[in-house]
Image 1: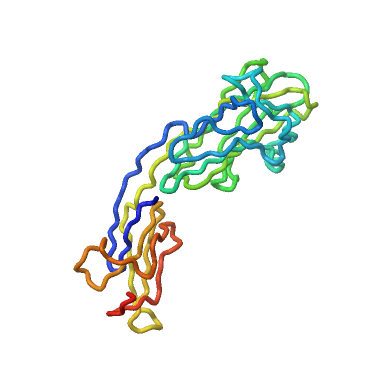
Image 2: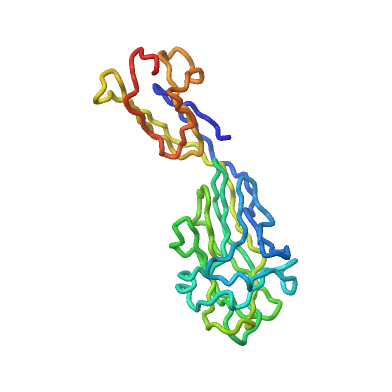
Length: 289
């Protein structure tokens, strides 16, 4: 339940609250240790939820599974190069050749990200091209800006390459954010059995923090209504603090605002900028005020 703050018609008080880290360094982690086609997270920090590790619509899902044959620990995500059939990043992005994760931060909290880390393995140096490159995008800007990229070298059959993408540009994330790892085979597409590849131990790191209260004053402006004599219009600069507010009123300032009655059912107003004005409010001794 969000904390409720009174928003009086006659006066307002703003409280400041510094952001307090409450999450672990690992926000969500996927180990791919279960022998299944559903890749749910193994670790999820407090005050955030995470969806399954999901292939994009351009990926041939039937050729992806977990296996214990080669791995960093336990099992790993396995695919052959039939899964991804584009030879450039632009083609892969357009074709939705990606794997994705989604996190949802609880109301009243925000995510400050550090990195996306995982291990890749491209098994052989001959034959057609399994993914040889990757890049990372997020829904924070509708998958427009590349957050990072890297190469997937062809190495020995049980040699994984550690990959890390800096996500420090993504701060104060609220609500739901999707991250996509796009894969393409820069040296061409081969047969289904050529150059199999694996992904393992994927983690999103950072901190989950309480959204701070606005540091400045919350202002309330009251002006006479232009068309109704004796009535007033109110507007305020409610800021996105992750809280909700009640609109309360009284005919006297002699009592504490905490004792004032909720006006006209205006309770739990969101502090996201969607409710910032009220017009034609009766003034004077009107009982409905």
